[in-house]
Image (tube, rainbow, N blue to C red):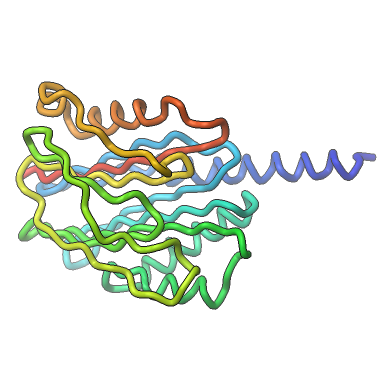
Length: 235
């Protein structure tokens, strides 16, 4: 008969396997491609620290919604459930605002050590405008067509910590510009740096996100993961 320690190890291995399966299901979903937008995703999977899930949806009004949910500081099983709950809550709101999700976790906290982060964006295909709300993540960045990088402001705290409002960042994505969102347990304290101009101009969005993601992964502590989402205006 397995000992208590063996049963705990088996349970942990099962949780890890299920968590990876869920993350892989989200990662394997094809990124949306439209006349207006390209979207690319790089993910270096977590091993033991945190869970990050990303999903996209095109709504009836032709807006593209991108949701990202991250959890850390709790068990793998609880982290997967917390991230999935975040995504389901974000799918149900009409505007990209994290205040309602914050209230949910204030009323139903996973535990005192949980770190819950999220981002939700709405991209309008008609006029190339976008708006988004961000909690507990590094600031999103813009890379213009010449490779210059701009760090945006207006990031809220982790979810479920305090009753607060979350700023709504708005903008218009210029032709050839890329909006990049960094997340994951290995993203803390990291910053995106522009590649040489020749590479930034020559690389397509998928190749750019892949290369920047791999450079960010270098030096990650064991068990930590990282997610990079890139959005580009095409026309």
